[in-house]
Length: 313
Image (tube, rainbow, N blue to C red; front, top):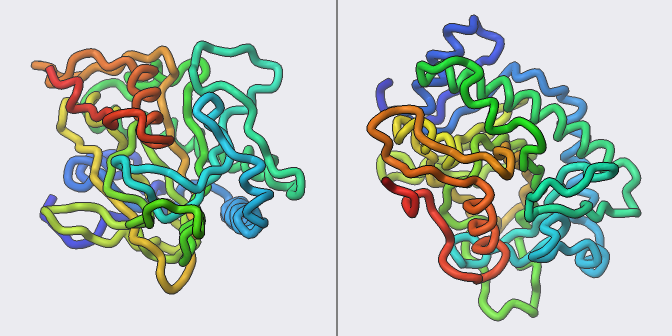
């Protein structure tokens, strides 16, 4: 695939062999692609964006009453760190529906503190999360086929209670912490790779996302009606470096605010990720260990943020 300046667009309604080949090229060359005809209801997409807007428009005191903690990571946060630097954004993380289910051993257990003043928020978010999960399972099968293994080869890592979650992002024009900040934030999100397998991103249409390609930060501007997809670290390990988890960042918003929703498709807490090819460039990577250490770097400065390079063979 020749080097181009724009992120590829993949039509999921195209013939399966074409989708497989185009997706494999996009994964090898970019690690990012736009997805059209993805099957997620546009009415649902609009509704979940509207709920995000409504949540973040609430008074700061109301939002902070829903704050997450190190022990329960679900809820509101306005002091997110990336590479141990504070981002210019506020977030709301939505975990799995734990009602009626016992703990699974995942350190990330607990109920999401949904806002009581928005009654449509939880059902809308849950419906959108279910749609994202179904789409990611479909993409996972295509990614496996593109790597030359059986279409179901990667699915066992997600069996049981996988650790996927939905994050609502708000990039305001002003610092969400106001005068409380000891140091001002820099970018909306500093450069990073995503820890899991696949990230689905829905945006409000405002640009700001960038991916590093050929040592140049290139814009990933939304495609109308589409979703943005990027690979995470676990696909890089599975592919034995054939596919790269791309470095990406979000610019700080200065003139207009920006909203996005990221669905992080993550393995089960007990999954062990290992390369599919040989010789293996990574040793066995326990997802639960990696997830906990990465989260500690995001939530607060509990030490150096873990990277998959720490698991090089």
